[in-house]
Image 1 (cartoon, rainbow, N blue to C red):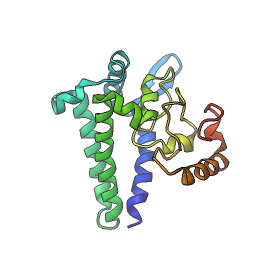
Image 2 (image 1 turned 90 degrees about the vertical axis):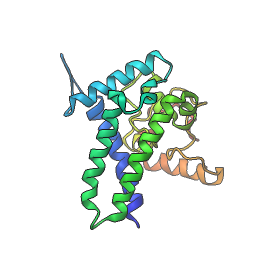
Image 3 (image 1 turned 180 degrees about the vertical axis):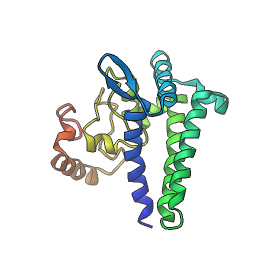
Image 4 (image 1 turned 60 degrees about the horizontal axis):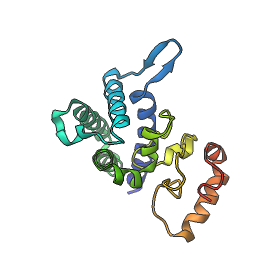
Length: 199
């Protein structure tokens, strides 16, 4: 059963990596960005352009699979889960965890862009990714875990931000020591955050 939470951590790390290097591509001086999957990068940058001009809304998700960008996202998630399915005989809970993570990713991402006010409140790190002046930060969608681990969480508005690095609603009795421990364990992750954030 330990495989399920390991899958969630793995999926969040892959989400961070894929968003940064595949969907955004690596910047190259004097050349276009490089992605190992150019079609996915093209789809993602079109998504960014739409979201920036419609205050975070992307109605392409309402069109379902008839929208090529939505279809590309779903096909990519299905390919990833097909790969993790190879681990089913030896790691069934890990495999099931990756299925859950892929389904949750699509649900959360889709809903946030169809219901921008919900997205702004539920996943403020992704709202910041699109609407902040720096779109090369805040790579996580479902939870901000790896953005804190890798030091790429940039908060645009403290009032709308998550109150802890897990991106979960927690009782203050748990949240305060968690935030203090995270600041001690990951000091560089908090360098780009404003003073006083996540006290």
